[in-house]
Image (cartoon, rainbow, N blue to C red; front, side, top):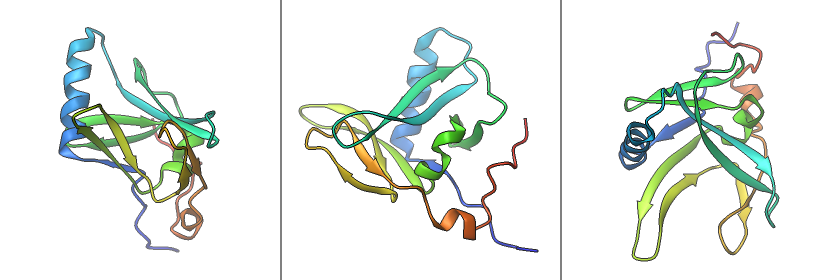
Length: 133
């Protein structure tokens, strides 16, 4: 029997948590959390997705960090494992930034990335079938 600690899928910086709280409050909707995923697209192959979630889907991975509820699409878990989500504002733009150890490259415009599944997930005891509602 393994005593390995289950790895964290995603963590938030305080800036990201504050921005999510602000957006959630301004939405005027009853929100269960922010659902994060990945999809095929862009010139580098994959894009991050974010949407308000009114309910938690049965297989969503729930992450609660700094008072924010993040729901991770089950197909994205291995691509996001160990990711830190930040929110940055600079002179020309603002937005969420994913500091993802599974990212192997990104396109020049920064809209899409190449991701590989986290190989250490299986060794660390991360079982995608272990979901609670």
